[in-house]
Image (tube, rainbow, N blue to C red; front, side, top):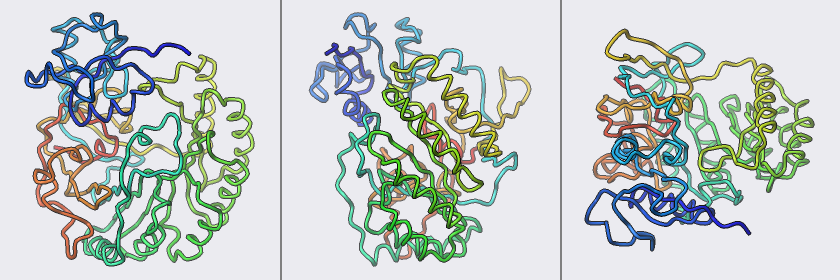
Length: 430
């Protein structure tokens, strides 16, 4: 058995604890760095906390920055301690210096859909819970140990009424997890929401593991089935191929839109290739496919060969061409070096990767045209505030309260040096 690589985590905080839980089985976490003198000399997660120094002193491969304030910490490590980019990782991603944009000022962000800027949408991003019936080896959330939050019929009725009371014309509800479909109230929530005239779309992120009978029941009792859309993932460690194909056929029969992401596990690539060939004949206007690379600390798993990654990219190119769709994204106006104003349309994930995600001190419309709901029903303006005090950003709002005003009356001033959440990047900013 090979020896674990030694790494350092920067930030003895809640996000640092999450990173520790996620990485402790794969890496030897030798020390926490933290700038807070009161924490130095103590232990956090039973690991020593010290002031930042070059990683070679600990024989460590790299440093993982776990804080939202990653740009400030990056500057400290890179410039003050002369630590190279190859030794620094942001949250879970390798920092590429060529993609770190220091000389731009972002002026405006709008969501763009196929080139058209949307101004009349309201999005509800609802985390039903962290629980999942799969324990995939590459999944971050399998490290989250959360109790199931029980929802009563009255609470569910309150939630539906609160959404119905919103006066926005076009509401999109994203139901995510964990695995949303394992929650007892999921079906009833779908049936309640799809009947609301102001709800245009209900999207579920799922591993599609529930039975064929379960989805047949869901679809057969849905009145406005055109409102349903699914973002599904296929995991070769757990999913059963024959059952999965039967579900694809069911979605086709009911004309329910579904995008399927096949997780291209590096140890199962021959199986991946065979199954992709099998499934490709089922691709239609309502069923779209893509492949996803399994990541290790935000980079392609080292078990991939170069030819493997090239094959994955080539297959995705074919899938994109077949779907004949333009990816929705964001329209960002920015100024470079204090000069001319530029405009770029880009996907949220690409905006993060390319450094178009420093919105600090901008007015963010979070809470005004979109909200984020956690597993307990607490309503936040954006996901980036989930770890913040509820008194600061939640203001006591809960979707299960009776007659709750879900939206916020004023924008927030972004306090973070970067945004690492794709759904939050899409929120309008000025």
